[in-house]
Length: 118
Image 1 (cartoon, rainbow, N blue to C red):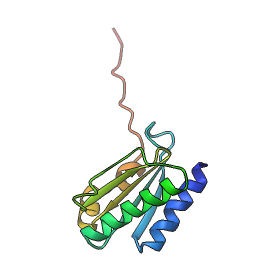
Image 2: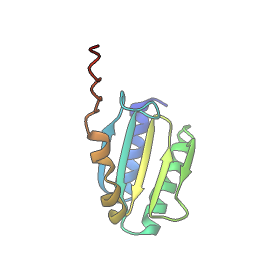
Image 3: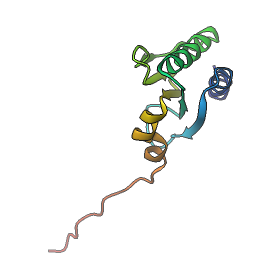
Image 4: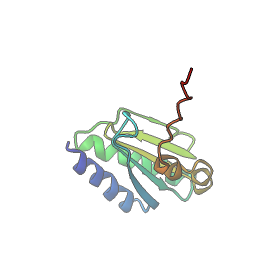
């Protein structure tokens, strides 16, 4: 499945499932793990689980089986890895604590080299 179609499928599913505060981050060039990270909030642990499970199910139906998922059983933070897109669904308090949007939007810091004068 094309990356844009996969991303749209995820966004449509998040909308259908009434996920809140959906953010899409283009992380190409910042990590080799994925191209896009999508972060969304659920209103309860059951809502977080339902969102993650539904996204995984619909992606699989469309021919893009998830590479894996984490945290779905607990429901505070669920991750669904769809290769080109990684979805994080969290309770608001967990999302506020980890603040992934700030983490991935921060500019890369390159340390200065020590002066090499002899």
